[in-house]
Amino acid sequence: MTIAPRTKEQLTAFLGNLSSAAALKLFAALENDKLRGGEGLPHDDLLEALRAKLLNRGAILPPRAPDAKRIFFSPFEDFFINQRSGKKHRVQISRTSLNPIWALMMSDKQTQDAASAATRLDENLQKGAAPGAETNAQTEERMMFIAAEAGLARICDQAKADDGARARLIERLGGEDVLRDLDEIGQLITGVDLFKQLHEIILSPAPPLGEEQLYELRSLFLSSHEQSSVLASYLLLAIKGRLEKPWRSLRVYYHLARSADDALQAARDAAAVLPEALFDEFEEMARALERDGARELDARTTLMRVSYFADYADGLAGQAAKIGDNVFLNRVEACRDVAGEAFERFGELALAQIRAATPVRQAGGSTRLMTQRPDFALPLGDDLVDAAHNAAALAAQSPALAKRLGVDVSYSSGIADDARAHLDAYAKDLIVEIRAAEGAERQAAKIMLKDILTIAEPLLDSDDIGLIRDRAAAAAVTV
Image (cartoon, rainbow, N blue to C red; front, side):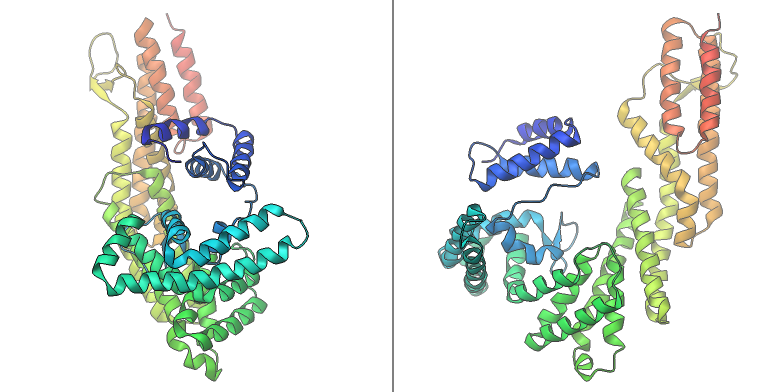
């Protein structure tokens, strides 16, 4: 079941108002109802909206009930991306492709054996602890992968050989990118057992890799290379995708590349895929920041992206420096230079957004200000306040980030100082307006001051903000 875009928007807004506890309960209930084959609800749309809201709040999602679809895609989860921006990279599979690929596999005559095995797998999973259910489920899981490998290969081969079949398949899947994702899953499926073993070696994406894990990964890499050099490359790319901090996978490459083992020497080309993938991603991040410098600033997103880029740069440089890899260190510095130039532009844009949230008009009337004064006739609006607050946060963190990017810290410090001084002066001018105004005008000035202090919070000390509030409260009782 699908829902109209407007209805989905309303549902998303409603779900966003639920407490985390209520949202978690609803999430679990929807998962169970979907697994039991419940009808009448847009399960996927609701779960997608809930998942996004819960993750944004930092909530821990409940364990997900296994089903055939989840079991089928789980070996490839390290290649999944939430959304694709720009060109498609090797084995980067969009999560939006999973539903149409599964629907194809469950309905196409070429994969009917896989669909039958998936149906039987779901039936055995629903039986839970019933006698023989677990063994039967394992058998059907193996059958599903074996049949899917053969069926998907036939579908992809037919699309490559026949332009008409390719066009019909693209239409059925909903796009050429989905077909590319299907083709890559068809290649990855040959390494299902290897990817499962990888998950057993790296249980969690967070901790750094230990020596024992490095040797286990080395053995797994050699085993995969005996089957196929392409599969060995995929395994290393899966390691990169599995780690929360992907730059830590560079240690795996150095472990393989610096070994005297003859077998590893023969696999050198396959191993080289990993650092190139890391630097492709890193360099693309630098270019994306460069492009963003010419666009309207989204300060909150920019701050997160620049911080992540700086983490990535520090991580790659740290791994390369440990073994004296100057080639990689030079590539890191080149990308830092590109990002650093963009970052200086972000500072200018942030200051402009702050100024846009501090409107002025010429002085006149009873005010004691002699030049321009705050224009509080119209409220700023929540969007403008939020944007300016995020811009202030970016300005406040600019000196520290500039240092990490290797650019002129004095320039970024100047941006932060200018923003801080501008907001402080504007707030103090508003206090004068509050004292001079009466009735509705005084109330409007007080509301404006509240918004300005919200904007200034990342830049001004809490003591300074408290002092401004006290002075404003005193001004408001002036007769």
